[in-house]
Length: 177
Figure 1 (cartoon, helix red, strand yellow):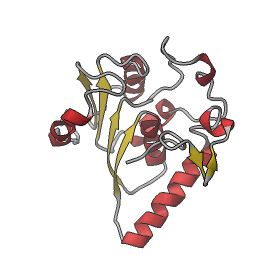
Figure 2 (cartoon, helix red, strand yellow):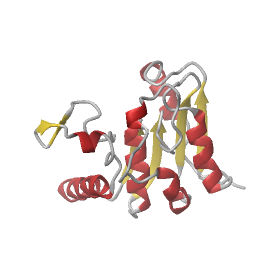
Figure 3 (cartoon, one colour):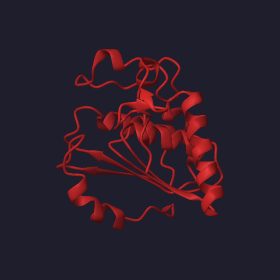
């Protein structure tokens, strides 16, 4: 399960999270490389053949971008995922809208079309709206491995945990065309 740096603890490398990590560099090449290094270490330590990526919010952006550069990703699930951070909702803070050095997952969508994916979008999410998922889908133009599921009763942070067991039962496969 991936989260963006500082998403939950507010610390980075043992210290307080620097502003640039929270803002302009949250999905930068530097951050993506750090995640790739961590996955490489985990893979080697536990003798794994690959990963099933699950990313929430900013972790979805990280997971999607990371997957584009790896050959060992078996599937991707995102929850309330920032699949196109260039689409800012009115509810977002204006100073977080500009990501500067960050990469955009939408720009990597075509390079991961063969990886089975399911993107869960909250129907009541005011922070990560369905416009992000629509933009991401537009990049892959109906690719059979990319699935989006709208969860009507979920907002950005509520009604995910209670239903997660059911969401895990939903297939993450490539549909026949």
